[in-house]
Amino acid sequence: MDLTSKQRAQLRGLANGIDTIVQVGKDGIGDNLVKQVNDALEARELIKGRVLENSMLTAREAAEALAKAARAEVVQVIGTKFVLYRQSHRKDLKDPIVLVKDRKKQ
Image (cartoon, rainbow, N blue to C red; front, side, top):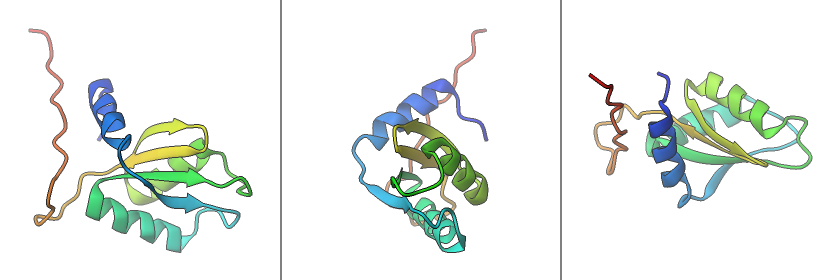
């Protein structure tokens, strides 16, 4: 699923109000981190992560690797922080994110 620029803008706005819950450190991206990201995405749909200074990865590399492993989309990368999005499959999710539709000119 590719996000449109309007959808990315919407998700960037929503990401401003959330806290960082994932940190990539010197150990890089392991199975435990991927599981943590999967669980967080299933529960929240939108998560913010951070790459610590002692990591061997840049924020862009970490975000793309985690997105690929978790089947998510990279919404934004700024400095050492990144935002990932994946639509949740849970039916009991309290406030699911509804993405704007991309209207095409007719």
